[in-house]
Image 1 (spheres, rainbow, N blue to C red):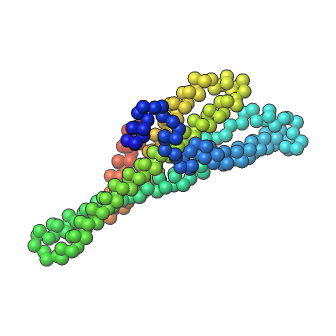
Image 2: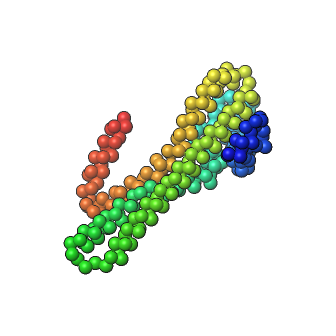
Image 3: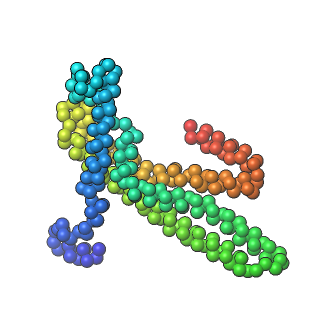
Length: 255
């Protein structure tokens, strides 16, 4: 970075002064991959919509009395279908980021187990019982390694989810701009420039943040199950009463 600053101090910054991104991180590569999954699925959904329209009129696609363009006037791709296409586009990054966050959540729930064993060993050791110190050293090393690994996994998981959000936002901006240049008069009436700018700034920013924190929501059942198992093992079935009260209170506060 210092080399770039000194080189460009007395002249205009040129394209060759910047670092080159990996091809997989370029917007052209992501957009091409998105179109690879989007176009076949979009045509398939259009044909399915036309087929449903023809069936409602008691016709077939071959004997339809209405032009396909008229049947497609009310066609809209569902949110879930679009989410599936986006997942296919970034399948590796999303899977990697979610897996790392799940490992972080599980390891965070397992740390108290080793800490409890370490505390119990120290209590027994200080009470005068002749226990081998090797067991305590093993617990201490296990806690330290688990905390260290937990920090690394959390950092990489957060990084992956942040990168996914940034890539997804860049891709959707590209898709919006590409679509806005091809809209007809009706499309410009329904989606004026101000609305498109609002979508690109506000809505896509929310999607960026959602990509960061959504894996934590997906991974939460894992840590919840581990914590619940620990409570049942140490306290008994009566722990379910406290969990039920906590869950009910959380739901009530959410509303």
